[in-house]
Amino acid sequence: MRIGELTRLGSPLNRVSFLRTDHAFLSAALKHPSTSFLLFNNLSPLAKDPTKLEYASFKDVQPLVGDNPYSKPEEQMVSEYNSSTTIPQLLFLGLDEHQKSGFDWTIYHGSPYFALDVTPKGTISSAAQNLIESMKSRGLQFVEGRMHMSLPAEQAAIYAQARALLDWNARNPFCAQCGQPTLSINAGTKRTCPPKDMASLANTTSIGSTTATAPASDRPDCATRKGISNLCFPRTDPTVIMAVLSADSERILLGRQKRWPKYWYSTLAGFVEPAESVEEAVRREVWEESGVTLGRVVMHSTQPWPYPANLMIGAIGQCIPGGEEIVLKHDPELEDAKWVTLAEVREALQVGTSGLGEEAGSEYKEGGLRLPPRTAIANQLLSAVTNGFLEGGNGGSRI
Image (tube, rainbow, N blue to C red; front, side, top):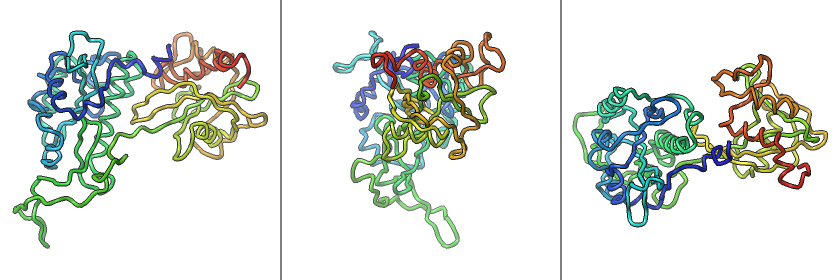
């Protein structure tokens, strides 16, 4: 596997993020014949099978999204916000510039890609359910699970981008600052806390709500309206994942969780904490989970992981002399950790790889070491170490 396939740098889409507020552009892109819509139901994408995404056309989604959800300028959409109306969550993903017969906008060319959440909810439940049934009648399905591991690299990149953004929008319907409902803007990549809500408010008395209504008034002040706030934008959570070598570079540290299949091990991993460098996070996580003490840490590669919005930062670390004792009493996350020879890891990479819910290959012998598949960054880190990645990078010296 090429590093580009692992890191998903092969996305075919130019995100043209600076056009996300241009509703004239979005309106034109929405209805172009070359435009594709990737549908998600409860974060499960539309597909023929787990190896191939399927896309809808504007004609398919029009009953749900309307003639043009971008017909009004963004400022007007915010000023006319009405929390009693459910707005379908629509994302602009980018332009596939490889498609020569696609859409043209000034100097930008390509087939537009959108993602649409068709989960039945609120005032759009009926229209969303009709769209779901229409897709199923074509022999398509909404595939559950971590589908990006079985997709070709370019499709996995599109899926990961769409799923991460839809998940973030779904998790943040209310403002984290003031608690009021928020509105998705910037083609699905920002949420704003509108200053007004046009929904009528039920008058309340000491004996409860009445059928009378009152006009909406200004909403309470919110700090997110007064400047740039990280509460308004999608989050990406940095996670470190590391292959750990012994001080003599002859063994690799592997760990396993209790829920994993028998004999299945992987590299260690954990979240980066605030005000912590990647190198510090690698050393801390390895010590907390295994008791092993690292010296030098070097970067290898990264991999987006849209469950829900992680960026996995792959690293390789090496123990200091005398720091290899395994102690599992600090953090109870691991059921077991052990040192494995490079030769055993090499063999497992050849015959013992699989996903967590999959069977090992036909050449695997029961009782042998099992490792993550080639599509996982853990596999690539282990492959790099066993193939001399470190030696090749600095004239054959150890790290």
